[in-house]
Amino acid sequence: MMKRVLFNNIQYKIGDDFFIMNLYSFRRHRLSEVESNLLQLIDNKIEQEITLNYEEQLLLKDLENKKQILDQKTISNFDLLVNSSIKVNDQMNINNITINITYECNYNCVYCYQKKYENRKDTLSISDINNIYTLLDTHFSKYNLDFKLDHITISGGEPLLKNQIKILNHILEKFKNTTNNFSLFTNGVNIIKYRKDIDFSKFSEFQISIDGYNNIISTINNNNTSPFDSIIKGIDYINQWTPEIRIITMMSNETIESFDYLLEKLNIFSLFDHDNITFKLSTIINTTSDKSIDHDFYDYREYLALREKIKPTLKGTKYQFDSIYDLSSLSFKILRKVNDRSVNKTSKCNTAEVIPLLFGANGKIYWCTCNDLSNGIIGEFRKNITLNYLEINKYLKRNVFSIDECKKCDFKYVCSSGCPISIINSKGNVLVPNCGVFKEKFVMDNIERFIF
Image (cartoon, rainbow, N blue to C red; front, side, top):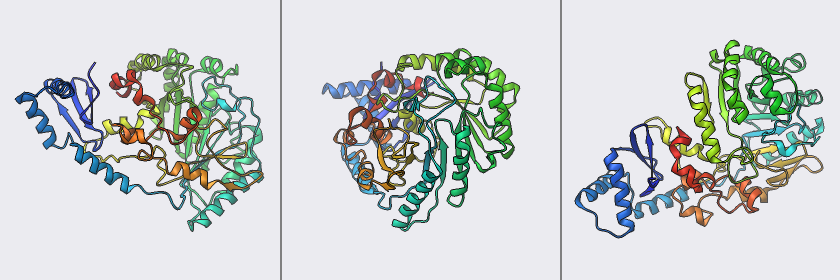
């Protein structure tokens, strides 16, 4: 198996073509097969302190002249430049929030990433929503910022339950002057049921789960219902306003086995004919683990086997693979269009620009959705209305230069030190690296199979 990182470049293959991409500048370069093998040999020789022959010296010099390979002084200067450009979010800017209005759900999906809420009956009240508004209004005033948000996501649990309709409508009314973009994350079963109670035209985006036809959904969600037609009718109803609609299908043994039948049913309803509807096969994740995927359902080998099993079926459809979270940044940089620039991310959460906020149905404020209810808490809004700015600062100051192991890592600008919450969940410390797949030999040895 070829070595993946050579001279601060990651080596990969697309079809019959060989490439390297510098992990600092993200410059890409095509190699011949001979050059690719020769570069491996050069690296081995240098490690063993063996003198390079003329052909090897020539290739190395050519790549250095093209700035595909950077010398250590250039890399050090590069790091200094990136480090000096890091901006601390002194204004504590917030532009996106998520509100989990309930932990209850009419489903009980075995692989739901929200399974940490199982059996919890917490739900928000009108006064809770008012408190959230007051907290944000106070925060923006404190930092002399306009109270404007790019996005508000309403999620759960399942937000479209009878007891939540009043709360959902209150959010839409209360925050109508703060944003033009409301998103709703739902299983879609009750859209038609509540179409007269909720003005769905106020939402610019929907995320709807469809994991299969009736028998598959009933098996997966332990609900013994047949909701497929209800979901499709709901999608057809909201589509009259042409919002962005994201159909998510979780990738599991059950969904893959019946995927052909799901495609057949979706085609009958012409869902693939709409440009505003996208389709993704998503990985089962565990936000309380540093492994990125949920090993209760598959390890990396099993996940890859499922992925490769379904690849032929996806050809000619609008379905796309949703990258493993840890690999998403590297995938983007490798697959980006020619001349598209790619930034050197130093923090997974873009903390120089925004603070991500999740308002939980239990009255706690979390850094983001990657929490296990006990970790990642940065405030509360029920008994007390407060943000813990000292706790927030821990996350704002976390970047690849605040963690010694990250400073020396070739992947620091694509890994960006990893998810801080999942590492707190698993290790209890925000200032340790969360390497995820970048320390998984099987993944790195088979990187093309995970990305392409």
